[in-house]
Amino acid sequence: EKLSLLTGVSILDVIKEEGTTELKELGGIVTFTINGIPSSKVKEILWAKYQIIVSVSPPSSTLLDARERQLKSLLRASLHYYNTEEEIDVFVEAIKSLGQC
Image 1 (cartoon, rainbow, N blue to C red):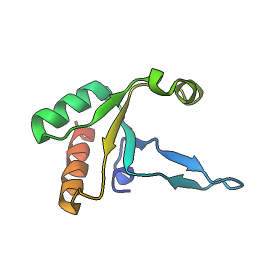
Image 2: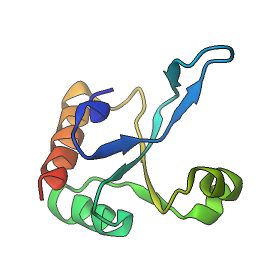
Image 3: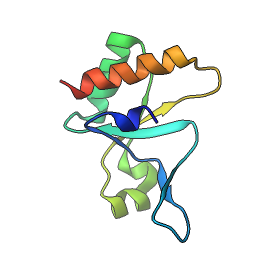
């Protein structure tokens, strides 16, 4: 939720509720991009500066969805019950700092 408030960050883990136009967020894996920064570069910077691990998913990993939505490489962060609120805040601040580059 916090990532979705950042300018330049697009969260891609949403579905439309059947029969509505309302979007619903999904699970603990967050798939996102930062406008203007290649996903591989974001991954590299997050590890080098913050020791945060994310993965990069190429379009071939979700070929039909990637084609339909015209998606490029995506970043995936796996957040779970063992992540503290402070760790999540550090992650969000790191992403925020990259979006301001």
